[in-house]
Image 1 (cartoon, rainbow, N blue to C red):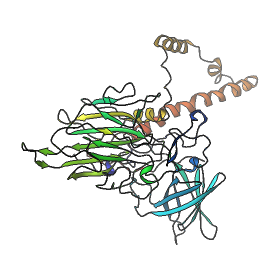
Image 2: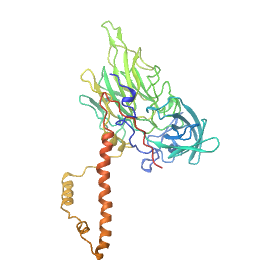
Image 3: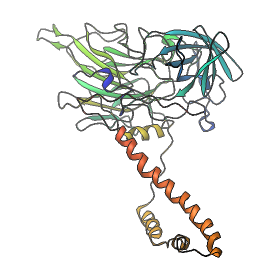
Image 4: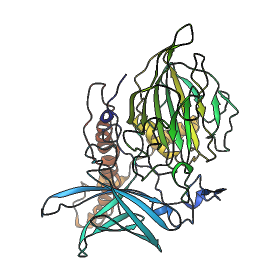
Length: 459
């Protein structure tokens, strides 16, 4: 099965950006980082007092086109902290990677933080960055435009296992794994073998990379999905870098991803893998090579790639099955919502696009808050009955008949507040959500979704 990049990319109405938790740290998540020798601190939740973290992220906006007064052009920016108070950034015209008008040509920028702000240089403009956005300034000092922070969420985040799939990990146990560990908040740690073995399969994995600002390259948020313990689909914090040969989405030491779809660390991301195992003859000779198609955050990064041999440190190829290995490279990568479809038993449309409700629920649990317990049915029914039996305010009935001068003050005190309290909420609760749900309806198999711009954060 072959799916086009733009069918389930971020720009589709169903798979577009939905509000995620801000990258700005929250006091409730304070936690000391793990110090890894040779790599520095590794944060698994947003740091509270690390000054560079709030400046990391993705930004989008428009500036005036060169030589044309009225025309605007879109500019997108990815900013990544590196050692010390230094930063690297990449700017693009048209939009962020994975968006319909994205232009792959990169402008590389460098910068240094001072207090709460950052100045980037190296492109056709100077960029002044604060936690909420960026101001682009020309060499003459003219403000060209402002880019606003955006938060992207994978369209497959929170996708439920389809009928016939095997749920491997849902945060309750590690029964489907060998030598696996779970965190106190119900996440799977790196370094686990999936116990059941599969030949041809569709695999869905959600992962969260640690924030490791002092590490670089293969030392920064490294793990991997070793299919049959032989073929590695790379997991790495390659956010804000050029398209790396061994970056996130690569077939390790075999093929770079077609696009760098890495999101910032400490944001939940998705890996969807469609794998077809090699075929063998009775004498042990290989008849056909393995093939892989994969999606990072809903965008195809490998398209039916043929693997002539194992990748990297994978086990040698042979006719016998081996388990899927979630690699431990020493970095605290976390996993959740892992399920698999055995294509020898059933087939499904893949990848599975999460519903609006599923994506919202996944975003609510971004930092593992426990959902509020449901109200007992009896108490809920009592409250509903009490609300129904409660008499309507008398002022609403008397407002229109009142015509005498003495009644005018009553009209002002009763009629106006009711308009505010009743009319406006009804418009929000009925009209707008219906329009939103219609816009985000999942596209049919043969329908190309309409493009839509990412939603920036308001200042």
